[in-house]
Image (cartoon, rainbow, N blue to C red; front, side, top):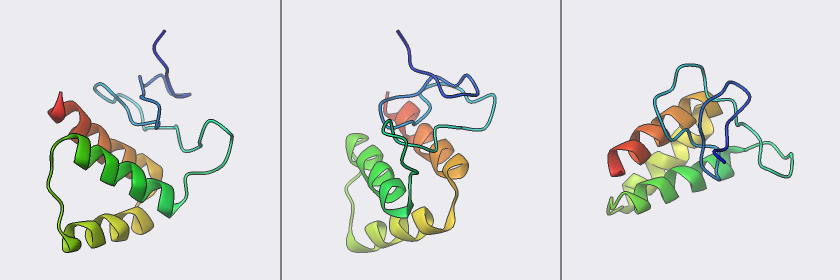
Length: 88
């Protein structure tokens, strides 16, 4: 069975939408109920980039950390979704 967030977006185990997004990503919480903080968003973005085969340098990782601290989950989930869908 496909997992979905509360807005009906199909998501992977990290809450990243796996298909076209029609409503803002709403999986802002981990399965245990804890909020996806900046460190979690950074880890999800870096993992998504690595799985897509993107070789990362120090500045890349620094930029991912900055984005994770600046963007809310709706923005980060959308960006990670684009990368995930392009990978496939």
